[in-house]
Image (cartoon, rainbow, N blue to C red; front, side, top):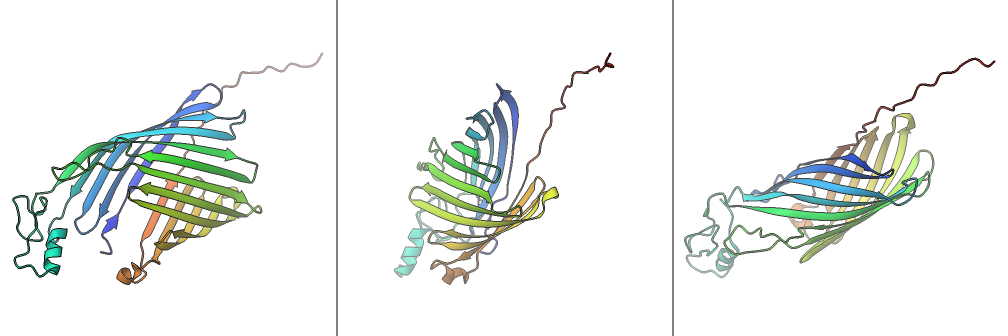
Length: 292
């Protein structure tokens, strides 16, 4: 089970069109592949994004962004061998002779064994639509914050492998982050995160402390702690170098699930680069003559 979960992803966003003097439009894309469990449940997607950024003041210190995302998603079970259906396990617990399952994935022709395989490489394709709002604000030279809210699976698409319809519930996510510099080298960043998808919900809180090693190269290291409600504590490490940022998190299971994994959690690694495209300025020539 140690390697049963992985979620590599890649995204890119860029501004493409200036509206007026302060507003702009951006476009981007997202690709990810999530693999979970012994059945190798694989969720793959490619999605396109678009956003409109509205500057709320003349200096563009406060910006409200509206984003939308559209794309195709494919879910696939790659390994049915070894999976056992709930009705089969209940019969085993009840000491039923010739325990069998009616699950149409593991045994599409009717009651049979408990562990399949049944349907060959079951998969499901659907279209997904998401939207969100993000408010960013620069308070002063040392403090800025951002607050975001998003709604995913707006059309509640059918994502069930079986012939019956099961709609994917709407997922709501909200976050807030405050960045403040205590000195020229030391900074603090508290963060809040909440997400809900029926019937589950999750709340997280993080606290980062950063130290600027070389201001001229924007080289900074950060350390932090986090907590995910009723689940796990988190150890956090980050490194900034210029426009390149990398973060590593390790989960330590604090709930009763630690009996299954002996307090061992999982690593998460994120790396992103903020590139800048500068437009070459057009300067009108100026001819200076001698004073007479």
